[in-house]
Image (tube, rainbow, N blue to C red):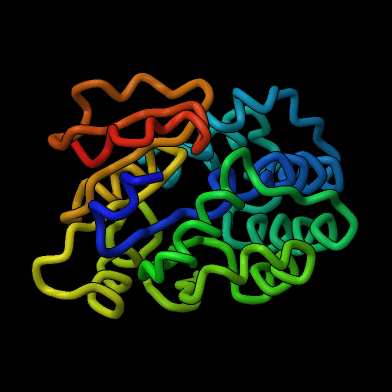
Length: 228
């Protein structure tokens, strides 16, 4: 992994990038709807197209379009989101959580090289602590910016800019890793080199002003490609 020495700060998303928790988020939305009396008919791919959109309202509007009676029953999305959050944490407590391919090898290499690294995530501190207890390898990441640490979620760059301010230095070459268009939109507003890790990337060609590297997994990054 010689390419890691070309950068001085590493920024990571979390859900769906480092760990396989995105499917659990989907299950939580389905269960939230079920408890309200509605059967969410989406596939995981359908869910991702809304949940990962740069439009932060895409998911709520899509669910309300499917179930207009649900919107009448509860027009405040934050109430439904809070229900989903509670269900997600219930599922986390008994779900099998695993690192995504290539993550442990990369984290080990970064730790050995003493590279500054930070996660910027929409997950809460409590959710992160639950997962760290399950996967100790994630403790190789020394810095975490969770949902409590910033006001505006992605696609706002606030969380990433905070990480750069706290852990970067002037002149650093920064690299950021994301798995969704929403996260890419956030990184595109920072000085970071952008890498999208996704088996089937959405059509984002020409959407952002910066070059975006794409690989199906961390295992697929060529040893010298990003350092070119």
